[in-house]
Amino acid sequence: MLSLIGFVLVVAAILLPCYVTSPRESRERILQQDLFTMRQILDQYTVDNHRHPLSLDDLVAAGYLRQIPVDPMTGRSDTWVLEWSDDAKTPGIIGIHTGHR
Image (tube, rainbow, N blue to C red; front, side):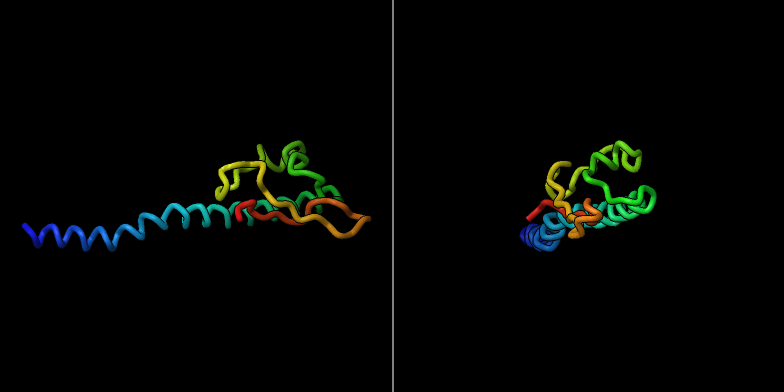
């Protein structure tokens, strides 16, 4: 009986770190996919419209997105950090990052 309890404790000690890190790793994988897709959409919008979008709402209004996605790291859609063009002749969003710090 004592060895069974010891075995269960060893197995729990091995599996607990996997359980704790797994949700974060899942969110990070989703974030990578979302960022890749969002950057492709930003590029496609720029090519199609000959200008950068001025907001994420522009992407929704133009039909490139159904809605602004939720940042998987913050759980909110309004925490994205936008990277802006430095060129005054072509203002707008050129990149996007998670709002998670």
